[in-house]
Image 1 (cartoon, rainbow, N blue to C red):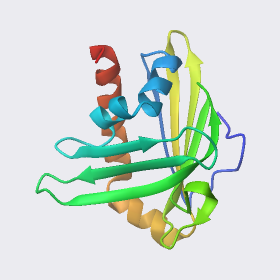
Image 2 (spheres, helix red, strand yellow):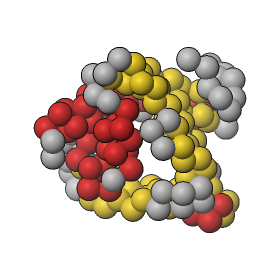
Image 3 (cartoon, rainbow, N blue to C red):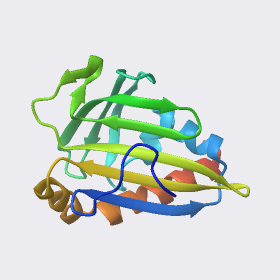
Image 4 (tube, one colour):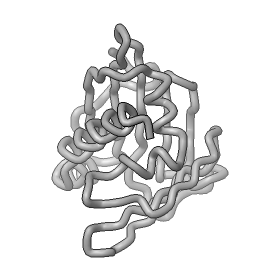
Length: 160
């Protein structure tokens, strides 16, 4: 699948693609409902202690991640594109209301495509430079983002 917005640059971007056996509408709901997102968005035993979603371009996407030893890591950004059941783009490069961020790291693109009764799931992390891309990959992008997709599917199937 090609991205509608940009061409992927392997020196700057990380991509995770997977076919999952849950419908697009439920994946969308998992990504856009704070109480749902808190259940699966970080690899366990990490947790999300707070989540704020204002689902519109320029609206807030904020989470606080808690490590197993209790350290908290707030993340604040905004949505750039919201196309229900198709595409979600958010970034920490801009803060809510499109205010420039003092510490930009990456922009995320989530693309959802119906595939039979399931979903072709594609997550792209766009970085401004090779150093941030490398850092994100070494931090465990593929394992971490892969784990949360598995957790999301389990969460959806549990009906919670």
